[in-house]
Amino acid sequence: MQIEENLHSDKKEVFLPGDLLSDETGFISGTNTYEEQGKIFSSTTGTINQTNKLIMIKPIKCSYQPQIGEIVIGQIVQIRDKKWIVNIGSSSEATLHLNSTYLPEQRQKTEDDEMNMRQIFSENDLICAEVHSVNNDKSVNLHTRGLKYGKIEDGLLIKVNHYLIVKQKRHFIKLNNNVNMILGHNGQIYLSNQDRTTNNQKVIYCQNYTVQQRIDIANTGKAIKFLQQNQFKISQTSIEKVLNYISEKKPQNDWITLIEQFFLEQKSKQQQQDQ
Amino acid sequence: MLFLIIDIQVYRSSQLFGKYKLNVIYAKKISIPAVLIHDQADDIINYIQIHLFLNYKVNIFPNIMQKNLIDKFAGHYNVSLIQDQKRQDGRNLLQMRNIEFKLAIDLSVDGSCLYKQGLTEVICLVQGPRAKTQSELLLIEYSVSPFSNIESKRNSKFDKDYSMFAENLKESFENLIILDENGKSEISISVCVIQNDGSSKSAVFNAITLALLDAGVSMKDFLVSVTVGLDQGNLIVDLIQEESKTAQGELTISYQSRKQKIDFYELKTLKLQQQEMDQLSKLAVSKADEIYQWMKEEIYQIKEKQIDQ
Image (cartoon, rainbow over all chains, first blue to last red; front, top):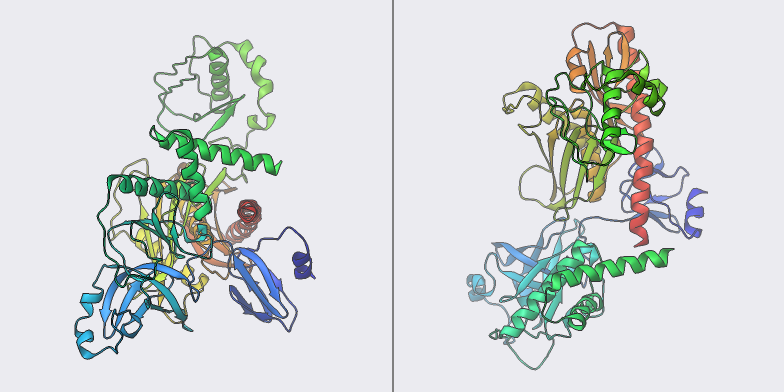
């Protein structure tokens, strides 16, 4: 059968919308497929994935689909009763309920809190949150329990393609040059000098930036943008690789051309490996 | 370095002159011919002269032109170029223009495509399924830039041809795309004709399907479109603008390749027999199938590279 050949071969075949996956009875159509007159067809471009009788397509490129436990950065769009509507770039809206926010003192939320929701988060604020659950209609519930989540300010936000971000153990990262980074799964990266990983403090205060910190943040920001332009995967190691290369060669002079050299070297290495 | 300036009114197609690729050919009026700074400048000029003379009976350098030159360079051309049944730009009757497309030209949106078919150029941007901001599930914005035609003219919303086609586009893609059942996400498409050199409507259809494919939007089928026509008793494919002015009939279809079903059908004609109409639609379907097979192979190559990364 066509599918079995694909599963066992090393090179996976690509399917386009409208391509036939199976014409036998007894198969179930999974995600990114559709059924018509007993036959199953694919609906996006991607590679095939089969578990027992379930056929589905793993897409090569698609819009962001959140999963439970992922860390996202988003912007508050609207305030409704007892909840905020957040834009995280997914296919449907995300909600943050009042009960799933963090308070320094441990107590239940009262009506006063409901009246003063704007003091916690107001419109156009940037927040960092974790995906709590995904509903059947693909809408998402977020939560910000814990000190590392919550409102973020005084920093640099960079938007990249979400499929470039590598899933890692930690997404609150301290880089070699003492820049704190939040690597959102939805393709938004936030750089600042606030350390969110320690457990000792109770409230995160904004500290004043020194000149060196500003330079470091700007440099890492540019390195990420270059990674995005050349469509390389973004992770802690890949960013540090670029920054190390610059600091080894010339710390001060014209480092944009240096980065371009770095990518040329990387590409030539890849080509050599392919050959 | 090679500089070539030829003052002509209409640029038609890019042709190969020996090993040099130039954007010249076909002109009605030529005033100042050429300025060349190159070692082999004489060679190139000769190529151009002879090509123009043989195909269009245009003589650009009457003083320099020599008869023995024609014999010298005649071997460089295909013999088929010098036949009677040739169209204005040197194509065969059933030959398409060169098609090129480039996916993911703009990284800030979810999907994008630049589609070129000869000199017709269309750009399309897609913002993939995202949280809903308006009442409609699918938004299509169709526009024709005012500098795209030879006569610059602004398209008004009251233009019937323009507004009807925008509605048709929406209708056919609403059936094609698998929209969100819960009605909580929307897809917005904006498409623009940058240069119009005939059969721009079929280029618009193809550009939108390719951009949707790049964005990863789920679709039921693969839509391809083609324009055919009838000119002086001959069936022709992929009309340029001058041909569409003189043609007796012009037919644009969009074709669902899996279901083998015609989706959009537009016929512009004054007088046409039923036999000819049947021939036209048969030709269009067979050409659309050809384009689909070609596009499929191109996309497989592009996507297989992405998997390896």
